[in-house]
Amino acid sequence: MKAKVPEVTLRTNMGEIVLELYPDKAPKTVENFLRYVKDGHYNGTLFHRVADGTLIQGGGFDRKMHPKPVRPPIENEAKNGLSNLPYTVAMARPKAPHSATSQFFINTDDNSQLDYPFNDGWGYCVFGKVIAGMDTVDRIQHVETTDQGDFDHLPVKQVVIESARINQ
Image 1 (cartoon, helix red, strand yellow):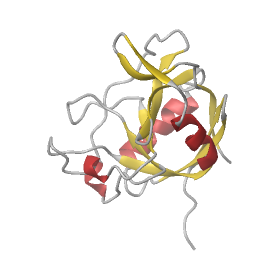
Image 2: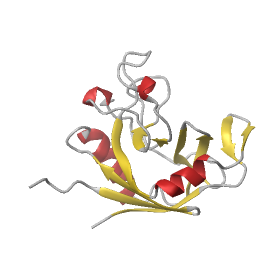
Image 3: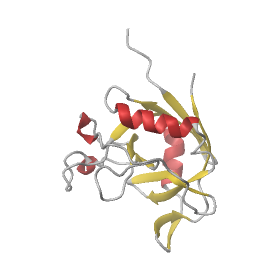
């Protein structure tokens, strides 16, 4: 019998998204993500980057576009054999390979070019996939966006993660 994997529901102002996580493939990443969920970190954060046809990214900024406090960065587990395919969930990070904290993205296209080894020798760590709410992801990926200050592909109308909870 297959062990039950963790599931997280993101309730957004555009609908719910249910994520299935893979602790067997990315244990440190899943533990990190679940800790942020348990701490309520994602409640009231935005999908602040919506690159239509590519990905939707969130988990780092509040409704006033202020960065939320984060824990230390985690080890990049991109060498886990999972690929950045449509509806998979991966950790966002700056250019440094081991710099992911709270931000994540949902792939809306085949972004396997982001897989290990990518062009920096590391790639972006996939740690789960969307198992329900693909229609919500699709709605979000088509919102109108603008470039504002340091933000590119910023939704004109905020896309809010109202709550994140671990499913029982």
